[in-house]
Image 1 (cartoon, rainbow, N blue to C red):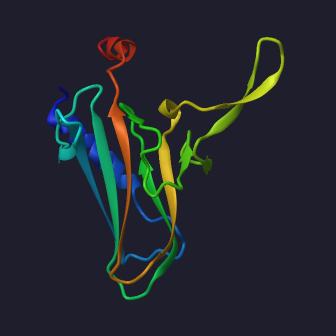
Image 2: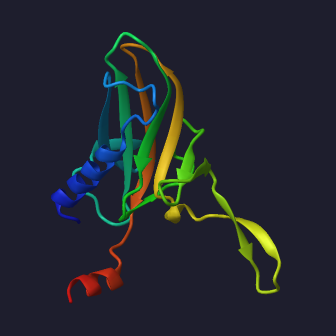
Amino acid sequence: MPHPSKVALLLAVCATMATPLAASASSDVKVNLTAHRVTTDARGKESLVSGDQAKPGEVIEYQARYRNDGTTGVRKLVATLPVPAGLEYVARTAAPSVVQASLDGKTFAPVPLTRKVRLADGREVVREVPVSEYRVLRWTLDTLDGHETEIVRARMRVTPVNAAATNTSSR
């Protein structure tokens, strides 16, 4: 199981990126990011527990709560949620479900992302990009009225530590 501070570090990385990006967004909009480990009991009922620690294969649900503490509404608020190294977005868990993703944090497109791939015979075909390559999720929220809250969420699976990365970091 990763050291608790590693999960806290991932949460801190997410919190720095989960900020309003819309030009009209004011300092009245506050963001609170939480992480919960998803557990399932013997009957298949899910519950969310502390996300302080997680091990490879476990699923974490990140929730970014956007609160407008002002009195004026904010239009076209852009909510972002990074997918840090060591985590992989779990397909179809984003809410609201209309979400965009990015492989580089700069270019966004609706999920699922696709790209052209050249086959061995020279033909080009369009294929879905594996969700393991998603680095940032983004939602455009229509209006966040004064004193209102909107929550965006997505689940991410903790990926195994890459043995090659471990070997190079120990040199």
